[in-house]
Length: 505
Ligand code: NAP
Image (cartoon, rainbow, N blue to C red; front, top):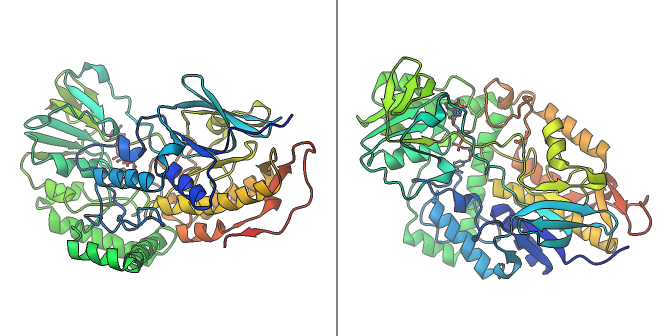
C-alpha cells in the first residue's frame, strides 16, 4: 500500500545543518519540507552556547552560508550573539520560519517500508511522515562531565560550559575552569578580568595559533555591500589558507613544523613566566587535537590572580578541588569546559530502519559509519548532515554540510525521477569499501600520532574527522552514482538498471 507522506522532506534540527538543508531545498524550488526543532528558537549550538567569550574560531566570511554572505560582520571572528542574529536574519529573509515546527523534539524516526517513507514522532506523540528524512542533529550537544571523585561534595556552583548559568554572577568570585579546549580558551580571557581568582586546571596543553580578532571597519562593510565579489574573494582566501594548514594535518611535515614554530613563538612572546610557559607547551603533534585560535588566552596567565594548575584532580571537596599534589583549591564555582560526547555518536533520537534495525544500537556496537558521512545502509531515504567522519580540525564545517547538500540534492533528484514511494538504500559493500578506504587514509596523518581526543570512540576508532581536505570532499560530493544504491520501487522490489552518474550543474 502506497500513500503520500505529509511532506516530501523532513529535517530534524534548525541549527546550521538543518538550515543549510532548508536553504538548498528552497533554492531548488522545493517547498514541501518541514524542520522539526526541539527548542523554541533556531540556532543549535549557537543558541545553546552562551558562555562569556563564546565566538567562532573560523572566520565569519567563511563560517556562513555560501549563498548568504553577510557584509555586516562586525569582526573577523564573530561572537555567538552575532552568529545567532545572522541565522535568524537569514531564516526571516528566506521565509523559512513557516517551515519550522518549534518545540517538536523528535524522539523516534521509523522507516515505513511498505509506504517507502519515514514517520517521525515527537515527545508529545505527534506523528508526521516525510518522503526523505535529513538529520541535522549536531555532533556537539551531549555535554561530557568526567566522573570526578566526590563530585557531589562540592557546595559551590558548578555547570558545563554549554549549559552556562546566566543567572550566576561570577564577578569577584573564586572560579575554576576544568579543561583547556576550544571552549575554555574563550571563557578564561572573558571572565579573568572580573573574577577574584581564576584556577585553570589543565590536563593537556593545547596548540594555540593567532586569531587576528579584529573589528571590521564600516568602510570595509560598505565596500562589501557595494562589491559583494570582494567578500567572496576574502572568503576564498580564508578557505584556502585553512586548507594550507590542513596540508600539515594530512602529511606535510614542513607545513606542520612552520605552524608549530609560529605557535611556540606566540607562546614565548605572550606569557611572561617561564614556568607557566613550560606548562603551556604542547608535547604532541600539532593538529592531533583541534588547533585553537586565540589572541587573549595566553596573556590571561600574566594576571596575578590567574593560576595554571597541571596537577591532576584527585577529588572534589566541600570547598573546592583537591589536586594530586595535596593542594585544596578553594572555590565558589567550577566550570566544566570538558567537552562533549561526540565519537560514540549516541543520538537523542531513535532511528529505526529496515527490518526494525536501530541506528543507535548498531553504532554503539560497531562504531558509527556511513557512506560519504551522509547515507547509511539499512536506513533508506535518510541523509545525515555532519554524519560520521565529516568533521574538520581546521576549516569550516558549514562548507562540509554544503558539500553534503550538493550530494543530497542529486540523490533527491534521482529519487524523485523514480516516482513516489521509491526508496534508495546504499549498498552495504559500497559503504564498507568507503569506510575501509577512509580509515586507511588516516595513516600518516597527525591524528594517528598518538594523542587522545574526542575524535576517537571507545574502541579507538576515529569516527568524527574526514581524513582528507574539505576541498577533496567537495569534489567527491559533486556527483551521485545510483549504482551505489539499491533502488526499491513501490510494487517491484528492486531495479537493476541505473542511469549514468548524476553530476551537479
Ligand atoms: P574539548 O576540546 O573536548 O576540551 C575538553 C577539555 O577538557 C580538554 O582540555 C580536556 O583535556 C579536558 N578534560 C576532559 N576530561 C578531563 C578530566 N577528567 N580532567 C581534566 N581535564 C579534562 O571541549 P570543548 O573545549 O568544549 O570543545 C569541543 C569542540 O567544540 C571543539 O573541538 C570544537 O570543535 C567545538 N568548539 C568550537 C568553537 C569555535 O570557536 N568554533 C568553540 C568552542 C567549541 P585533554 O585534552 O587532556 O583531554
